[in-house]
Picture 1 (cartoon, rainbow, N blue to C red):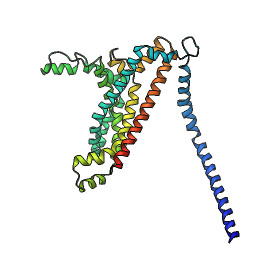
Picture 2: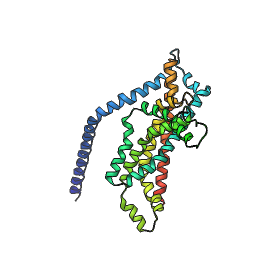
Picture 3: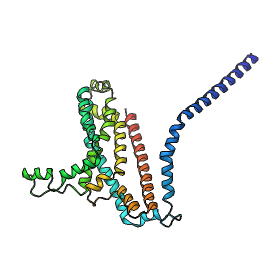
Picture 4: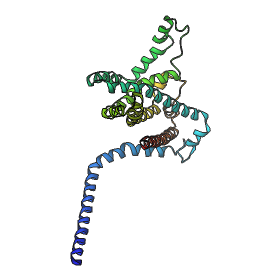
Length: 303
């Protein structure tokens, strides 16, 4: 028995070693297949970000210094621009959620043919340049534009509303441009929700509101989270619409970076602005992911 046990043990060790060797070979093959993609990621993302960090450490004279980062805390205009950027991002993201969630829900409940036709109108703005759409909103929202003219003709207002060249115009223009980026992933997530789950909830006595709140909404959170992240990140780097719709009164972070590099030719300060924006954005996205994970855990643990 002992000899047989020793034989089986040695055979088991050889088998385990063989399996580990096969696993290593498979890992190497997968790494070889992924190497072009990894090189592309390294060349397009890692190297530019590293160069941005390195460039931000040099002052205008070309010496290593933290003056570019100290300027952010010393000058109130930098902090004001930073706050404005995130203020606009949060407002536009919230507006897209309020408008996009009902729209995506309606599309998910329509028959397939009707939903496909309606999706064309959601995707249609992508066929037009952002610059053209921004100028179109300027024509619509200006003091003598279509909206003010109609409201005055109808007797609703006596004086034109200030809808352009301010924060309201920036929010309206950016919400129109970024709304499809929230609707599309949210609609895709809603379409994957199994209707049997909703019917099972209603069969167990839940009403339409309770079924939506306890079943449909939690299941749609992954799509909503994806759309919110996409819209929020795009808002932080938006340039054309705030520059035109803001009328010089709404200065966002991307506009400040453009002024710093093109007008003052201070590439170190511009790189520092980009680094600060990147770090704060990653921190907020990490916090958002943690809150979403905690929320999902709380929802499902309470069931």
